[in-house]
Image (cartoon, rainbow, N blue to C red; front, side, top):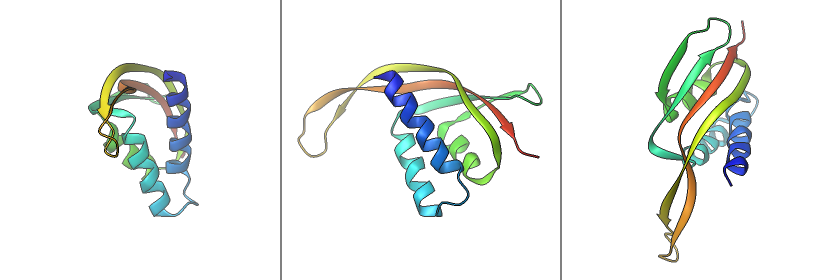
Amino acid sequence: EAKIRIKAFVDYLGIIADKDRPFDERNGAIRQALGMFEKEATLQILNSRTGVTHTMPVRQYLERVKLLKYENMQIISAEPVLSVQESPFYKEKNWVVLFKKATMNVTLRD
């Protein structure tokens, strides 16, 4: 399931980064992507041009993706964890794979 969630996260990144899509659609993709991470999750961002690595909360990174022009974004690693979530509709508890931390390699456009 972790591989499926990584693929979904990559799809959300594509929507968030697409400057031709409406802002509402991109904000919706941010909300969906945030649901794939634990509340306090962080991303390590490696800038492939400078070699500098930054660690930031997932929301902060996704907001940056929405505003900045990236040439390339690649997930290098992701640390999945199992989490129990309660369904708001059925009051059932389900095991879900969430991410605690991920590492990204990015290149900004000039």
